[in-house]
Amino acid sequence: MSTTTSPIATQIDRPPRLLLSVETAAELLSISRTRMFALIKTGEIHSIRVGRLRRIPADSLTEYVVHLSRVQSGRGRFVEKA
Image (cartoon, rainbow, N blue to C red; front, side, top):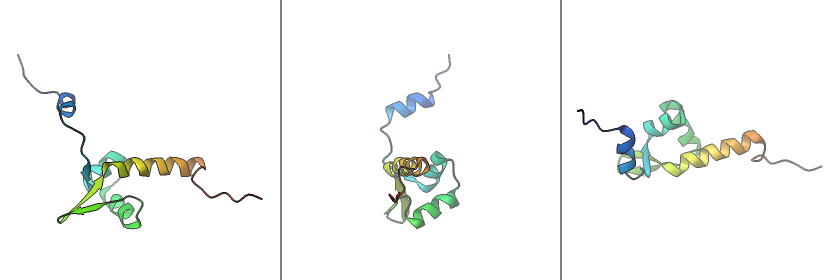
């Protein structure tokens, strides 16, 4: 009988990560590493430095996706009333 550990079981045992590498954050958003750095540079995604490392708070990805959803649905734009 095989005793391989399921990736799902491994993820359940661990608490969620609070900080993500740029590469992991990019992968979660299905964008390139270069695009992620561009979003960081423009301030669209918040990042922090931990020593020499750049990390993305997991909440920043959620905030970014919510922002995109609002903008694309028209609720995030300033609409001038006539």
